[in-house]
Length: 433
Image (cartoon, rainbow, N blue to C red):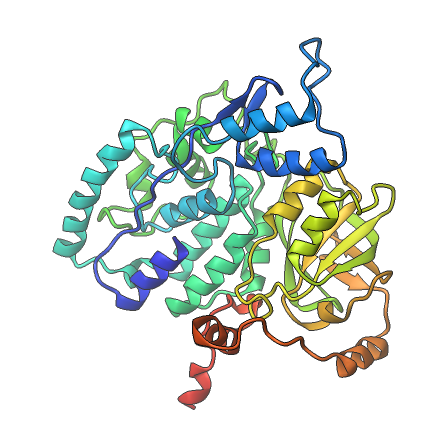
């Protein structure tokens, strides 16, 4: 989806972003609860550490861990659609709808719902409106619309990946957006959604009580979301959501604004000697606000996954897992660490933090270095002097890239850092000076 929006911005022709839809919620009879594909990744960690078992709620407890994980794999994905919680797809779909670039309500409609087919027909009508009124993507991609994207992301507990995508989209659309803007919005927007992965419910559940438009309606009424931005329908965002219902009083998915899960946004920008360019942390309130642990260093994601599979990460120490060479250049491509992070949750290693390399001082962290993550002061630091960090950086030699030719090699040579969206055209500014 971010790539679609970037293409729309580059060509700047009348167009809309159409989302295929979220998956329906799976259900595990053995665990007696709703599940998603993330449940399988979490179960993999629990399986390795022998903590995967049925709940002690008076029901059946006879199933083995092999039977449980087999049942999870069979029922986690009951049909077509993107991951059901506020993972990357639903985060970006909600954000793009709040920017005015997609059909009202389309970001929460399940992929297999008959309504999704009706949206396909509606998309043709909206494209016609865009052409008749000459509504172009860059008319809609403004600082105000990007702030709307940030507001809905903070309110719903969206993915950290959204930060990277928003920065890349903004650069393509020539909109000035930086990490400081993300922190500024986070400071004023309450986190109100009890949605997976940090909460209990899924996007398909939210759809049943009004979907994203009902949440937008709540935020517009509170003056937190800009309802006056133009959209692909030819109407304002506020006009788009007028006909949608308000959230029911008895629903449990979206908390009242005066009783949020967390008073400020869950995405926090941390800075310090470990990440002078900035790092993104998801702080939902469950983790506490300050964590100090000993660095446990790996050089690739598969090494972390292998260690988890073989129960090699201690459960009785405060650890900060460092994954080197998974940044934009190092991989190349900066893959998300979903398997590792979900497995850590499944193992219930609540005393472990996971950091991935986006360049700079993280590359010189060694096993045993003490690292502190402070969400109150928005700092991420390692207990080393500036002199020691500089000495290590001088001695550090980047590893040989695992690709040396063709598209990925070109990408690795051109890509910028994550704090600027990991785009490949930062060099343009130098060409035309």
